[in-house]
Amino acid sequence: MTKTPHKSDSSQALTSPAAVKAISNGRMALLFMVMLVTAAGNTAMQSVMPSIGTALKVNDVWISLAYSWSALLWVVCAPMWARKSDQRGRKAMMTLGLTGFVVSMTLCGAALWAGLSGYITAFWTLIAFAAARSLFGWFGSAAPPAVQAYVASRTARSERTNALSLIASSFGVGTVIGPALAPLMVLPFLDIGLTGPFICFALLAIVVLVLLRLRLPNDEPQFPARGRTYDAPYSTGSGSDHSDGDDGDDESDQQSAEAGVEPARLKWFEPRLRPWVIAGLLGGHAQAMVLGISGFLVLDRLGLRETPAEGAGPVGLVLMAGALATLLAQWGLIPRFNLGPRAATLWGIIIAAVGVLALGGAQQLHTIALGYSIASLGFGLFRPGTTAGTSLAVSRAEQGQASGVVASVAGASFIYAPALGVWLYNIDDWLGFGLIFALCLIVLAIGARTLQADADLTEEKP
Image (cartoon, rainbow, N blue to C red; front, side, top):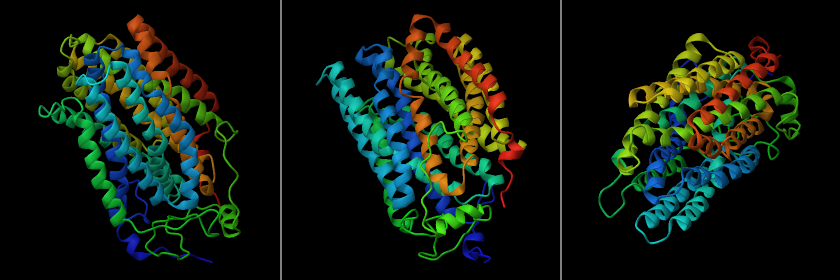
């Protein structure tokens, strides 16, 4: 039976190449805001944490390790929340994720304020910060898989790289906004100081949470509670059996959904996913090390260790430059050259390797920003490439689980890699950058042999 898309949704289609007819402008804006506020808050935090660590007089490695427990929880919890989004609906998981972000940022800011004000020691400050940050890994990991699964389940296979790149670019916009606003949020009154970004972004996330609750309609469970097509749960036709944007559905997926059969649980290293997961893990570790080192590198090479409060601005500028380069990759290069997953992954890791070498040798602010931007441009191609490759490797009915795998792989990269990179950098600059460069070369060598060709991945299935 032929299914007809809703005209109301089709008439509101985005003009972007990544647009999906079934996703209206208003709903895409809300999805964008959910991802954006999280990314902006996190990068604002990253831009001030090197200065906070220096002010607390703790070793750089301990600042990096404070994120590890949160990253580990992200790896464990993201697939769980992705499965829950298939059963409970995407809106519920986005609400949970934003709530976790708000609580985590508020408690992180309070812990750091207490430490900087001298109410607790540096040791207990880091313990309290790590505990509060873990709430983001535990509950905050619910939102990204839900957003990604929503978009992936409504895009044709040939369009999915661009569609997921558009969603990934919401993180990119956030990573521009966060470092840009962070220095302005270092508030001079009430002794808030460097903890200002935590408070401000918690308040902004509350606004987005309220909009999400008010503006998105309640969605219904998909697998296994309803035996219908795995379509977008935010549809205006509540309870109707429609398939806006389902033009690329596999026949077997629709039959399984209609029969109420839940897809088998995906494992990280099953044959379909293995090449993309390996590339994502190794390249993700390289990216995490670059991010971990960059803030401390700015303080060291600009001589700002004695005045850490002045470091938030330059660190923010470097992170912002990198974020703009990431947007260039995701909004410009991928759609302009119609890069498939394999091409984006391999070209991205080559460019990232060049940027790592430039960053390692940079001594001035503009050369540091240039090197970091080149590396970010490469990773901005690489990350959507592996994300889309993972998505295209499985069926549409498995998209919720695939998005959980992507999120947990990304989280795994931040368990110990930033601390390892900073530790090696503190021993010798080129120990850290040498390892990052080596990881990029390994990804290139393995990916060139194992990643599936783009023509095969993006071919529509009957």
